[in-house]
Image (cartoon, rainbow, N blue to C red; front, side, top):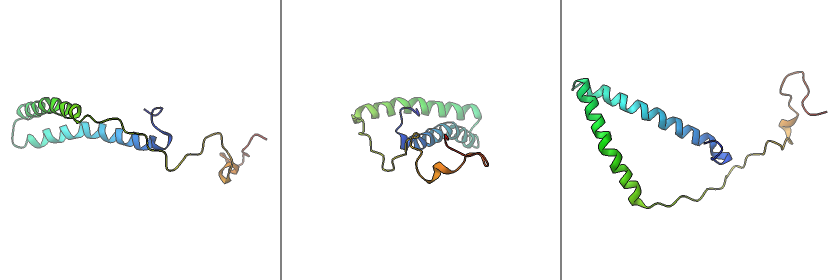
Length: 104
């Protein structure tokens, strides 16, 4: 995913993926835990599985029916300086204290 994302958007893409993965695993667990307050565990898991089985085809159908086209890429509003450009005040700061930076 990092190579497909624009340079200025990699962090936000990774954050969105982590959020989706954590919510995708946490929400069903919390929902099952809450349902067990009123129903046995087997009934709670069966109900959640049934709800997921019904919702997945409905969401897929809704996505197909919207007929959305791919979005045009938004140009970066804050261009990132390429790594080979080492000019500027940061270029003179040594990475290791006591060791001069630069090639010569």
